[in-house]
Image (tube, rainbow over all chains, first blue to last red; front, side, top):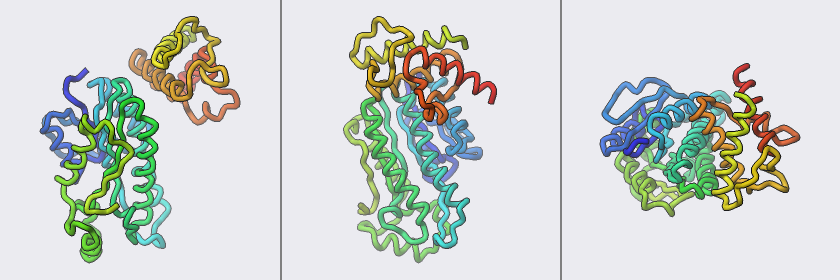
Length: 234
Length: 100
């Protein structure tokens, strides 16, 4: 079994996921990341898997590979997501299904298989990424927000189901961060969201690390089933 | 995998589960009930047992199988009801996986 702590992060090709992977691998975690395509970058202590998180077989195979090589998973950060920002009147079923598959089923599959590895050591930290657009009910993101609401509910119940094995499960909802996911959103819409926050600024990668650090700390063994939103959103 | 090996895995995992559950782990046979009114485990320990069996198959035999499949969960008579029935279910699931 690896002496180093092992962290699994989904959606590491770019944006927040890549930043999390680079940061935690630099801090000494063995980071296992995934995305549908190649990472396109590399760093010490980082291993990339080409996996679609909504594909049960691929998720199983990735986690089996991590368990075989390291014998442990300490932390999971479920960051992978797809968004399709559209008025509901213009949202095709295919786009809706894809969001639910990746954001909800994908999160469930990774949690399920990773927690089976965590159970062996009776220790684990799971952080599932949600978004503030769910609690603020942002028009134009109905299905994406609904999928992320599902993630929060799933995580709350997961906390109860896995608590007895020392596994904590929490959700983290960032305010808009300038990544590819929101690059297509009109600036006036982003400004309107930011102006309604208690802290009137975009989120950044350091905000994400700060919340993740709190949730994944060994000292946070009594923090579970919670959701933290940035910017004052509740 | 032959039934004898499957049963040995089930019994070994069941003994571990009973020890963790704080129940006596002696006299386990293939008739030992795992789920149902006279089960020796509570429902969460039974879940843990199934996960443990799957992991034992993966780690010791390089066999990847989903025991709690949709088909298994929809059967009128549970494939987890006794140690022996679970051993049969393991063999059947492996065969089905190979055929797929």
